[in-house]
Length: 182
Image (cartoon, rainbow, N blue to C red; front, side):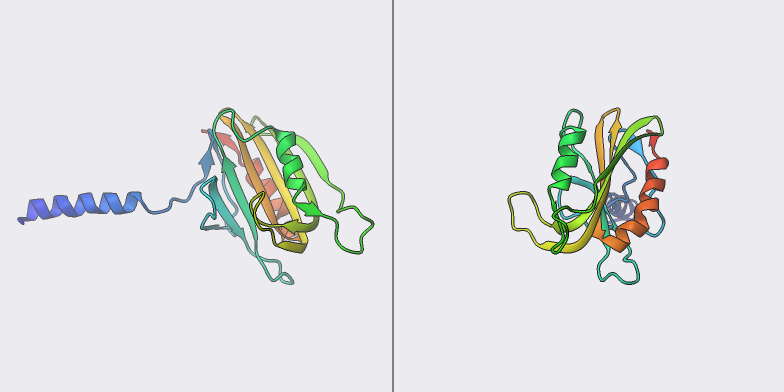
């Protein structure tokens, strides 16, 4: 093969290979955001996720937390309250508690011109897909945000050991504050 053909073949092969590498995603549903520098992009366990961020564990925690970002498309993914109810349904009270998980807190804010609903709770988290096998994780917490974007809701769901999630709470707030329209 002569040099021009070799160069063309190499260029085409490079484009094909590089187009199949995982991209660092910072946008979905017409929204863009800036993730905290301490968060690492991790392999997503589901094709439903836009991106998964790994949040480093607090010094006393054994596991990292993760933030799953989901966008299902315009008119898809369910309403805000239905998702909050589903997320909270993955938590049960800790053994020895008064029968309630930690108080659930929700709030509505505006960020980047978008309506955002945040939710937080803690207790024993049941991992896994709905209807599938679940592994209980005691002492875990949730902090999530549902952003009502122009192309549909974008979901940011952080779960992990309670101290790690509490420490990263402000980082997710900073990510939400960075929201902008594409």
